[in-house]
Image (cartoon, rainbow, N blue to C red; front, side, top):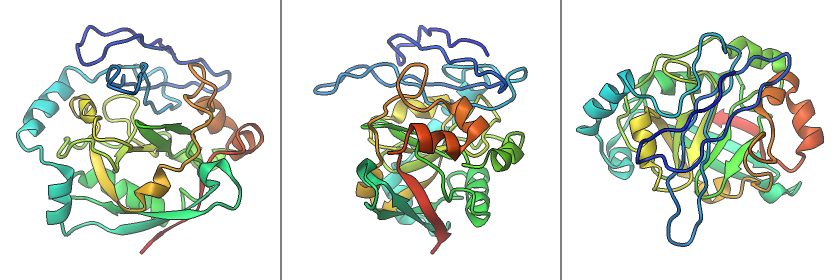
Length: 273
C-alpha cells in the first residue's frame, strides 16, 4: 500500500497521515483533508477513505486532480444548495435506519430516515437502494465517527458478504450538490471505485469535498439528532487514531468490532418506508 503524500493545495493544509499495511489483506485508500482550524474547534488533518483489496490497481490519493478537476468545474455551475434541491426533488425512496448503542450505551435506540436522490447521483442512489434491499447494512457498525466532520459506515459484519462487493466498483457520478450537513455520500479509493462504504456529513463546512469528486446521493430528512449521537469515543481509525482498523474489519468483521470496540453504534434494522 502506498503512503499518502502531502499536497500543496491551499485547500488541504496540515500534515497527511499514512495508512497502515494489513497482513493478509491488501488494502488501498482514498483520502481527503479537513479544513484548517476554525473559531472554536481546532482541526487536524483527517482522512476519509475506503479500503479495498485492489492495492495493485488503485492509487492512494489526496485529491482527485486531472480528470476529476473537469468534473468539479463542469458541475460547479449547476451546484445548488442541498436544501433547495431537496425541496424541489420528487424522486427517490425513503429508508429508515434503526440504530442501537447510541452514545455507546446498550439499550439506547433511535431512528433516522434517508431519502435517496437519483436526480443528484443516479448511479450511487441505485447502488445504495440495492444494498438496502439485500439487507447489507443490518448489523453494520458506524466505525469512524468524527464529530463536526463525518460519520462513516458500510463494511458488512460478515467478511464473506463484504468480499462479494469488493470488486463491484461503480462509475463516478458528477457532483450535483454540495457536501452539506446531512448529505449521504459514498467513500472511495480513487476514481471509479465506489462500492459499499458511505459517510454522512455532519456540518455545512465540508464543501471542500465537492472539488474532490465526492457526490451526495441522498440526505437525512429526519433524525439528524440521532446521527449525531453515534458513538465517537474511539476517534480516528488506526493507525492515526485509536479507532478500528478497516483492514481488520474487512478480514474479521463484527467479531473484531464487538470484542475490541463494543461501544460502536450499529444498525439493527434498515428498511424502505
